[in-house]
Image (cartoon, rainbow, N blue to C red; front, side, top):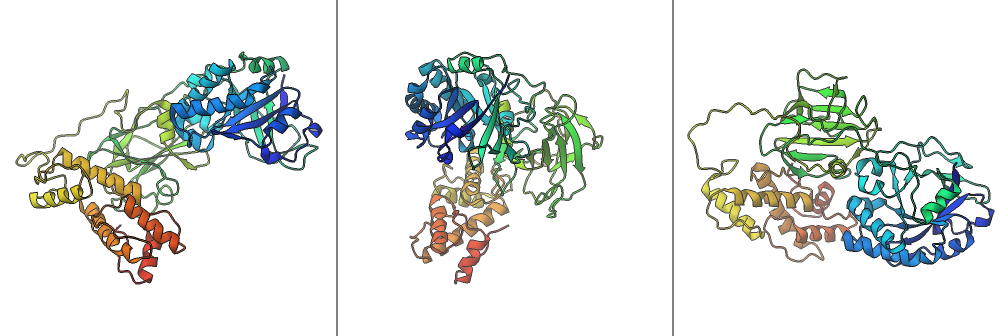
Length: 526
């Protein structure tokens, strides 16, 4: 048996529920902490049959265990007077809250159960359901799944085929349209189908479970693609993948998930700036699609950039998770040895690979499990030198002292300026490179090597810091070569006062504006 229903909030404030033919109605009750939907008390009194109430999570505003418990308490306080054996509870977990992972949601759901004895449903979309590990929640809580298919307008209740899920056998409720039309209301509505009988709905409302939802375990797992460390994160419209550095080492690369090899590009030379496998990507690549036996069959893609494919690997081959697919190379526009890993949806839209690492509990750069990493042939060494005394790029003592003094001036803990480019200095150079990428999107390779690109960036930042105080509203800056919070805020001030896009990052448009108005600051180094 199935039930048809809608979900509403104050966005449907003009709806007359007495004119809507619907088996059930789920309404928004609360959001975050301290907010009650303006129409909740009106709607809840109109609905006499089976119904539901949901809380819109704001883990971005109330993070951590304390935040989850705080929001759960507010939700329970608001809806408890209406728990009459007909009303199911729901956590709406989407938007920015998803970044908090499954732990926040589990704490919220556990807290609601402790206070009410009712297991609330979890509302998420198909993308979120497949990219996180919900096994601990799926074993106790039912799923309300949002999946709109082609997202076309739907007139009347017309449930489509139920979408597949990774952690539940199927959802108990499927929200299949956000563009629904029903007689009695002129606006658009969310349409839902519940795979429940009336008695099963009431069982959920009373804290019991139904048999339609059981956690399932995928037949595969994720493997770390390369041993190393995270050097650059995914950033929408700027950097559409994860970079995993290897400390200047050429390393083998393994498939993270099983699938079919759909594209291989070889022969791209170092320094190439022309796009190869996607706009703005300039390297060799191996691209695998999640299709075939033993895969998720979700038709998503894995793209491994700066990789020379094994000569034996061919397009059309099926590979297993953990199978070697190639070795790192220096092809394309790169400043050091690293894997550029991208993950795309079925229609080739990039998303953050960190979602997959988090879901499967794999640390970025951990040693690949179930594989063997061949040892490279030892290179002949000239005369042995003291380890790291002159740094990765061969800095002498005098230059190393200057680097140490410059870093100390910016507040980095390099210790004494002894001219020895040891692990402590290398660590703080990495911190500097990482901070410049964070505050200025510098594009530095985080390898602890104060090479020419880092030096050029440092010199340019000093010129920018000298130029900024000449603009109205910007105070005097310490000229230390560190593009950190104060420099970032100064650039924001310049941008906001002059009608520029305000992001605190001095890129071409901002520098061009400064130069047009008399500044001699050069453009950012490449």
